[in-house]
Amino acid sequence: MTSQEIKSLTNQYVMNTYGRFDVAIDHGEGAKVYSPEGREYIDFTSGIGVCDLGYGNELWAETVFAQAKRLGHTSNLFYTEPCARLAEKLCKRTGMSNIFFANGGGEANEGMIKLARKYSFDKYGLGRSTIISLKNSFHGRTLATLTATGQDQFHNYFFPFVEGFQFAEANSLDSLKSAAGDDTCAILMELVQGEGGVLPLDMDYVHSVAKLCVEKDWLLLVDEVQTGVGRTGSLFAFQQYGILPDVCSFAKGIAGGLPMSGIMANEKCKNVLAPGTHATTFGANPVCGAAGLVVQEVLSDEFLADVQKKGAYLRSQIEALGLPCFGKTRGLGLMIGIEMAGGYKNGEVANRLVEAGLLVLTAGPGIRLLPPLVITKEEMDAGVSIMKKTLS
Ligand SMILES: Cc1ncc(COP(=O)(O)O)c(C=O)c1O
Image (tube, rainbow, N blue to C red; front, side, top):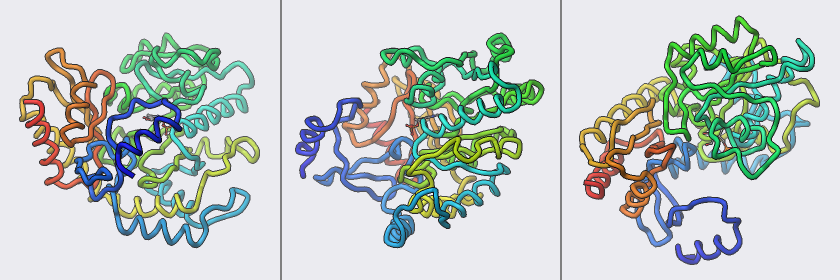
């Protein structure tokens, strides 16, 4: 099919819930993707932080194929090897104790919210179920995670929202203390607010919150749906922050392009979700698990150190352009935000870059870059040169 045919068919038969760019993608290689007509795009988005190994990774594709042939799905009523091994790997690399596998980020966060409420219910009974999340956060599109999302624009249309959520200003311990009360059971945060504009939380603030959580027996819930799986240059961002959350969610890059997510619990929380309290038909799919093992194999400690170097290089190259529409860059590893300057609008800038052959994202009022973690220097340079040509 041509790009035009794909777009027409999609617009006729798929619900119009996404603000799509005017591009159809057919295939990819490394950090490049191609339209059906063969137009090349440098990809600084990796499918919104998912395709960490880029496109066309042989080992990943062969492993997925072999596992699909062997066993594509059974159910969680039986044991299978790939997710058992993936869970072991994730726990050993992070110090967490066990894992529940799900399918998407919002769903993983739902599980984390349920776990926190059950922990509190088991220990303190009813009436201690409020979760405090941060303003400007994003936690998903299910009803509870939309409610937990600290941006007013998401609290619309779908009334009534879920009870038991409060908001605090990011990086303000005072704001957190005044939002909290006897009914608080947990604090939920992204360590780098992604959709909100790529805003890393202050290290001191995160440490103080972690300490407060221990004092009050609030669970510390860290949403690593976007920051996790190597994106920030450590396997999980909490490792760079020097904390161990009670529960941490992950999704996006975990299986290198297949739908998979989950939550990891620490020793204190590992038995909170008992048989019958939480489940999902597709969770712990063996094909996704096998793909996840390939991702773990690639994301060695040396590879992760390189992600930090690549992020620093890309940011320095972008800042060196001195473009009139760009302000400062910020972020961690290959999760990069670019501030807009001079009254320029991020959506317009993103559209111009995409038209010129560079895929980028927006977040908050700025531009967001989440390139494949395997991106090469040449591919980064090619993307930066498109920025220069298009936006100078
Ligand atoms: C921090 C964070 N949490 C949750 C989600 C929701 O994930 P999903 O779209 O897979 O449900 C996202 C998605 O961008 C996210 O960035």
